[in-house]
Image (cartoon, rainbow, N blue to C red; front, side):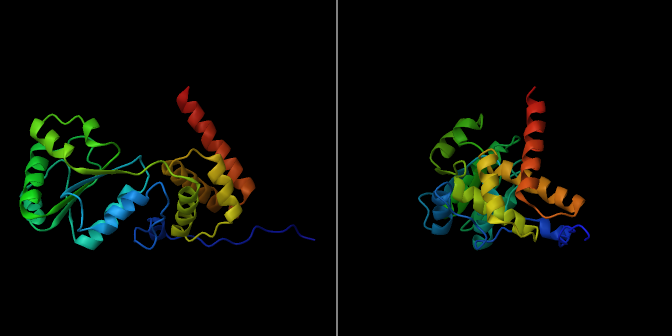
Length: 234
């Protein structure tokens, strides 16, 4: 009898690799519930300026995308916050993603915050850290940011990590056994960035080998990624 062949796998078109960023696709747990509640509460925010802080891959961009869709906010370049942003925030909304990634237009942000406060507009900033750690040099901007409402997205718990892994595979049109998901939750570093890396690698290996994603395959990929990380730390 011929050996069993690997089950055929649906090839994923490139466009399906883009993560879904709708409200319905958002995975909510205790790690991000406070930030989700704040986004859902708009426009009844405690202040005109809100900062969502959390580690890389924690879901800040997903929440920002939901808010932008709801508000029609202008997505501003953190390096060049110009007159178009001032116009948009007057009674409206502006989003600045990754505000702490360097090159922040401090004068532009200072004027943007003033315009938002004067016109009941709103500014949402996302960052890896809270404003006190951004290294802002402009004293007046420091004081404005100190008065902003801040909310933190913490490292994911098991529920959030499992939900995100399942969602990442679904974004690729790949069905995944819940037992494999739970195995990954217990084995990978507790961060969404790690979840993204392992899903990307598992999907690539499964495509290359034309095989299903099993616990055995997942174990091999996790070991491979751990080895690579160990080499980088040497």
